[in-house]
Image 1 (cartoon, rainbow, N blue to C red):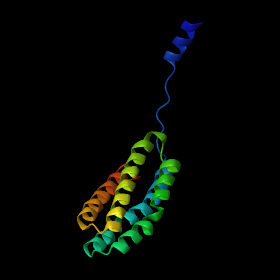
Image 2: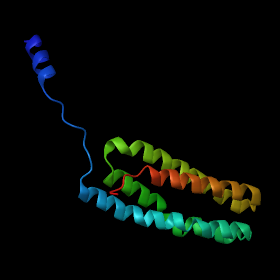
Image 3: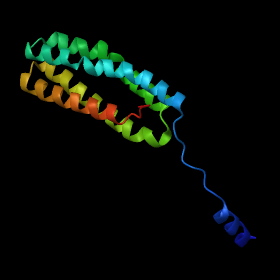
Image 4: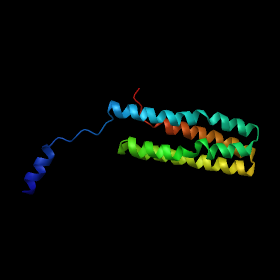
Length: 136
């Protein structure tokens, strides 16, 4: 009986890995567009840093970027296939770490640290966005 089961299991075809439908990719693109808009606004943060306007740096991080965590979690948990989730989540964690460190630099009024963390946040933001599948 065990041999028969082994034989039958080895003869069976494996299902192809799940892929995104066109409708899923369009929904991902639509949701990603809102996140890209936030990424595009990172220049505002860099301008605030250049002006050493620490209040607006913190306000921007907690204001417009405040719902970024919600958006990335929804995208990752609801729209992405399980096989794609971990790298996207890891990239999001790196981004959030950089934003928290940037917020600390703004609170401290540390110009050099803020410039460094802002550049790293932009880099991590781009890395996160590059991992999200697209329809095009």
